Length: 111
Length: 351
Figure 1 (tube, each protein chain N blue to C red):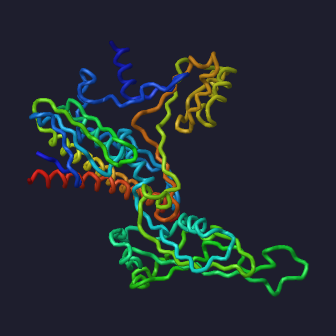
Figure 2 (tube, chains in turn cyan, green):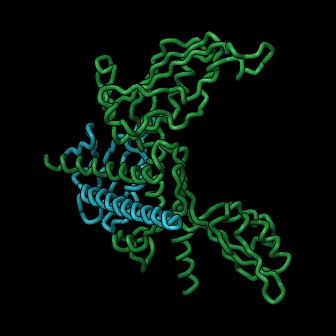
Figure 3 (tube, each protein chain N blue to C red):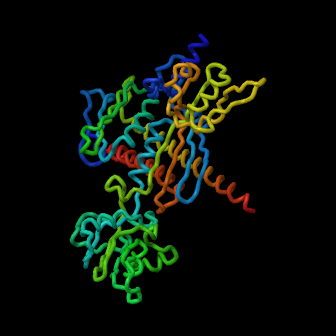
């Protein structure tokens, strides 16, 4: 089974164990790598999660996930991406609300 | 057991600034690391603890606090602000005439670095496929600017003046001399927002009589990762909230010296029963120089640290977009990155 994440073939699955997979994410660096690693590590089913930048001249990262209990590794990856996306959405909503509040407070002394 | 519990809390929440190094730097609250703590990701707990406080906001810079988030995500926002929020900047410079003493390539480099006031969200990326066919660029992805200026002698200057401002006309080429040339329907679409350089007073070149510049520039959309000219922020940075704890009562002359060790406004001297006692008033103002640890009698009185999940962001915009818009765009870029990989995962799962 091949996971083609963004064009070029990726995957190194260790034998038949779907729970230990290395994903290659292209055109990514510490920006997504570290934040995604944090979200996936917060998952109790994940035994190991880490990423490396193979070479600084190539913009791709090797993202490794090892799960407990035979769970396929794509599942915590998908869940981590969803959770990170939700975190960003919440941060965005909170930020916009607070900025609007601040702007309104600034208008008031002038009235 | 109570003391150990406090120590654990400190390891989990604080970065300690010691005399010779900084300890407790890494995030350790992952599930399984601490017995008795449930560190699994919990959306409700995150949303309850998370808050943003805007301290200062004007058209060019803003300072805000983000509390309750991890360094990995805060750093991702900072990196995106610097390198992945798109803007418009001059990419191709067509030099029809340059008789100034500034070399062509140096002039082109300078023109590229001038910030262009155009909302990048209204433009598309230029298709880099067939360069020769798409050389001119279209109205949805290109802005055309023109710089046409000639220096001449001022006929009305007095005979014995030596001031270039009097002797010559147009001898300093400023960014206000760059004019926008609308292509296609841009004149209608951007009728009210004047497209051009953000600042009028950027000196581009100096000329003397007879020298002229006749240049056409094409601006395209790009990101800071490609070239720093596309970065929308002068800078974007964050620092962690400092925390200063006094371990014992400090009075009198010692308190005076303690106050000098920190930035102004951090420590105040209170008058209690006639003696001056030091009190931490506002640790946020401290620059964490750790000066107090250089004095042998003061270093054991104070505990210096930083709160690990409280980030004080400072965003300075170059003027293309207001700083609060930049932060929202940066957060959207991170969401888009996650979506991209989710779509990839879904499409490969179909196979």
